[in-house]
Image (cartoon, rainbow, N blue to C red; front, side):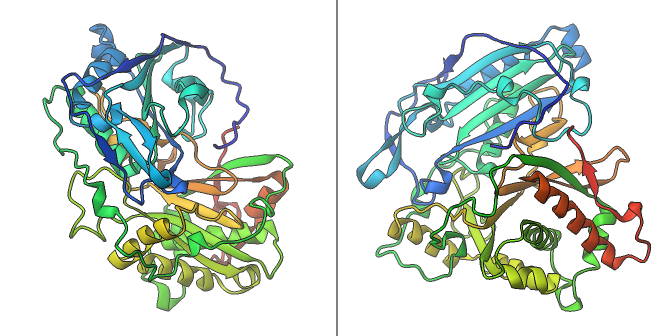
Length: 459
């Protein structure tokens, strides 16, 4: 989880007793194995999401309680997504499967003595008192025999509310859980069935027989080292950086002619990887990794059906020595990122799934790694429970010492761009900011403060 940031905003959240919401109608009682991609070690964790909604004047007048609306819709939706009401069990060789027991999803209704406006600017993670917005009891936070979904709806004084969700990542990736929450909004607004019907079919991403690794998977390189060797344990700083049209145009100017077809993701990822490595000052001989997640649905559209809500995530990695990464031009890192992304195809995914079985579901390496996840096009803010789109929809935490999310963001000048949270030791953060600006201004003749990358401070 990302570090909590000291904030002057103080408020109290009062929770009602948690309750289990079960499917509104009888559902099948069965065991459903997860795919060999679903139950990899890197996904055996909880994913926290948060949606923040402004008040709706008419619904305040009518005294419509969003928690009541969502609670009722949840029971109806679980008839279609009944595996979420079950519990995970471990079978032979630690294989995970869902016991569709109908035990229910954990739901909490709450009130907070704070208004939407008090959250201030920018509306980005980490949010103040996030632990207050999502009930997360220790006894229900495990992977096995715990609720697969935990939802808390917290009403605000202004009539707005916060919808926070914790999902067991083995069940769904971000696209899958977005499909679920969009459907929950549709049912809350009066639909009788989801517009996209859920598809289980986890066997589509099971290993071949016999399994065989045919591609290179740098994200899963086995490295013997302490994961935090380059992250001193002396406290960390958190900053969010805004890459708007001007900044992205400046970065685009750093790409050599033969790489001008690179995407914004490619360029930004290569840029941050290089700047972060320079700031960390590792041994020049050390291998440094960039790791990122790609939704491979488009790559696998020939056999992954619409409505599939399991994990279809390609974990992709590239590696370079620290010396090459820091001394060579940005094009070195950019070429590595572009190649890693280009290599993802159906055979890559088959090889990745087979690797999970052959290597006993390894975790991607955290040693000298920087993990990024791009959700700028995920559309998580479109979830509408009847109060309109969310003012913010996405991960509850924007970064930790090893990972960062790319989030869609509009600044107070209505410029649209990308917000990136970075978490580093305080001294390293200063070097990182200096490096960001020194590289970004190399392509500008006017090296003044207007060309510096803007920091979206949460302090």
